Length: 433
Figure 1 (cartoon, rainbow, N blue to C red):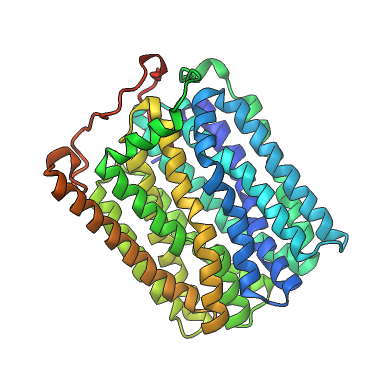
Figure 2: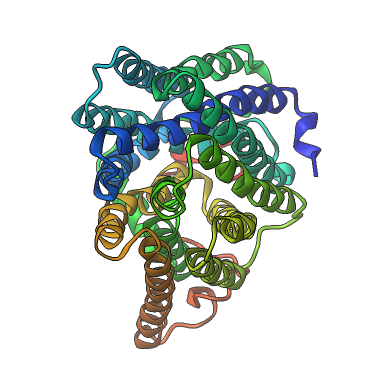
């Protein structure tokens, strides 16, 4: 389960990321609580904030993937992490001084999202430079474990800080926590990194990555699952605060505890993923996303806060298994020379769907109550996955393809039809985590 930690660079990286991720969860809780306070408990305002934070992923993730293929990933990460730290510190200072307004949260959520959109593809691809191909699947699981172990701590810490000092101090905590990750990046032994050869500048490189995916029916299904989950299912940043405050009338401390309870299931899911010795099949990816939709709907129907709290670990478990399985499948089934761009496209669909889903689900909450985003999101997620699979099968039937192009038989290696420039070939066969 912990094989990847034998690599010193990965140990240092995960330690720094763990501290920073605690701060990330603190800010997620505090930012939503701050928006509710400033907007008079408006679900739409929370949805807009979430949408603005993830909108840059829709616009900039492909660019981030191209930058990850072209430049030194470690230096790129130091830049993006500093960008997000400054954004958090500014928002925290505005809140602490009593100067924050809803529009400030909107603007800084968007600015923060810009840094995240460029950061995620580089982080995904950088892990492959720290661990070998034989430990890649394990590293993906451990990365998720560190993030979700932080989720156990972060929301509870946020609730305590908000209750004692206010949302602004909780957000400032996140700004300071980035120092741990920046220090970890600075301490990495560059001699032990398996560098990927930088992609030379050329025209049409973004289109090349897109064509690669469209010629792979299995990747189309996997990315479609990511879009469905990211757009309609992974809106906990909004749904949890609405259920806690507007449905059950809970305070900041109880809201933070609910986030930590959900993190228990997420951590278990990540640890189970770390035990995998091989990437999951595409059929497993589709099935796990369907199970997640079922648990999402059940959680939205929970009659009391206690029942809701019992449902949350199961929801976190199913969500994490789905995300990790999809991530593993995409990373381990793409050619190294287009990895950054394919992962950027995956993250564009996974995170970029949030600006579409969050405002719509916020409107549902505004008209039908706090439960509507969870129940409606579950139905929309299931419908989107079914639609993607049916469309892909129809296209394949029209082509008369079988074998490698079949959407639910991913184990067969598939050679991209789009030629890749030989000079862009990576020295590492490991996929990004």
